[in-house]
Image 1: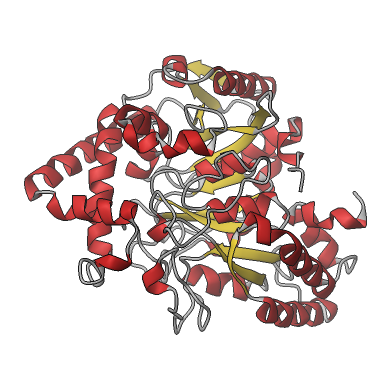
Image 2: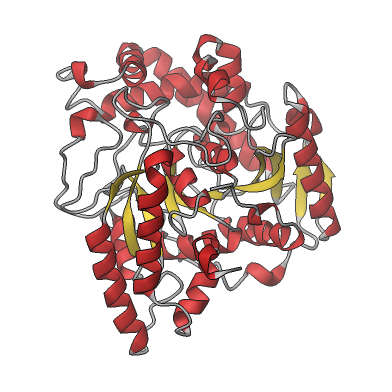
Length: 466
C-alpha cells in the first residue's frame, strides 16, 4: 500500500504503526482532515468536522506515545461518531432542525471512553432525522461511495460512508431496526451490533430506548474488536448497561471456529430474497464449513409477528423520547419522524401490551433456539444493494418494508448481538453482506468468527472508487 493509501489501512494496522513510531498521529490526523475537506463536500458524511480538537488530541497522543505512555489500540487513531452522541461544546443535532444549535455540556459515555483511550475525534457523522427512517428535508443524505445512485443505508449512513471512503478509521453507529447493519452492508464495511446494554447509551439521543444499540462500524472484525473493547462495559450513568466484565476481544481472535455450531435455515434465508444475496450467504456458509465450523440445518423461530409489531413499538418509544418537543414544536419536524411520533401517541395501552407480550415470547423462543447452535448465519437484507429510487418507494408497500426489516429488527427486539460482514459483490460492483447472530454477550464469538472469515476472504479489503 502506498503512502497515499494510508487512509484505507485497517485500524489495527494503524495502531501497530503508531505504537512503534512508524506513523505520526499528527501527520495522520492532518492527512485525514485534508481528505475530508477534499471529498466530503460530495459525500456528505460529516455533520460537523472538529479539526481543531482533532489536532489537539493528535498532538497529545504523539507526545504520550513518544514518552512510552501508550494507552492501547485506539491511541492516536482518528475516528468519528454518529451525531447523536453528545459532545461537550460541539453541535449535536441528531439530524434534527430543532437541535441544530444544541451544544451539550457533557460528553456521552462512549465519547468519554474514546477520549480516555486516546482516540482522535475527527467529527460528528450525519444521520437520518432523530435516527429514524428519513433525513430531515434540510439535510442532504450521505452519498454511497461505491455508486451515487445506490442507498447508503439508513440512520447511520454517515458512519458507513465515512468508514468506507477512508474519512476515518472507525466510527460509531446506532441500531434500532437495522441502522448499523444496513449502512455497513451498503457501504462494504464491518458492523457490530452488540448485545443490548453491552455499550452505554448515556448521552446518546434516543430513538426507542428498549431497542437502541450503540456499536462500531469498521473495516474488519479485528477493528470492531478493538473499538468494542474501548467502549463497552458498565456505566453508573446508565442503569441499563450490562455489568459483565469486558473481555480482551482482540486477544481471542485467533482461536478460530473449528467445532462451532453454525445454524442455517435455508427457508428463512431464501424466501423472498434476491439471488445475489442468496449466493453470498451460501458462499459464506461454504467458507465457514471449510474453516471447521459444524454446519447444521435448523428451523429459526418465525419472526413474522415481531417484524409486524416492531414499527408500532418503535413509534410509541419514539413519542416518549420526543415528549419535550413534540407536538409543541411539530413544525420543525420532517414528515417521517412526525408520522411515527403521531402513530406512537395514538397507540393504546391495550395494543402496546399485546406487543410486549409477543416480544417476550419471541425472546424466549430465540433463547431456546441458541441452546442448539452457537451462531446463526442470515442475509443482511432481502435485496442486495438497492438503489435510492427503490428505497424511496418502500414506505408505499407494507410487505416490502416488512421484508427489509425481516433480517434485522427481530434482533433489536431480542437484544441479540450480530455482526455484519462483507461477503461479495453484485455484477455492477456493489457490495453485499451477510450477518452472524449469537447468544447474548457472546460478541467475542462473533468477532472470532468474523475474523476467521476475513482471514480466508478479501471482500472486506475492497475499497470504493473515491
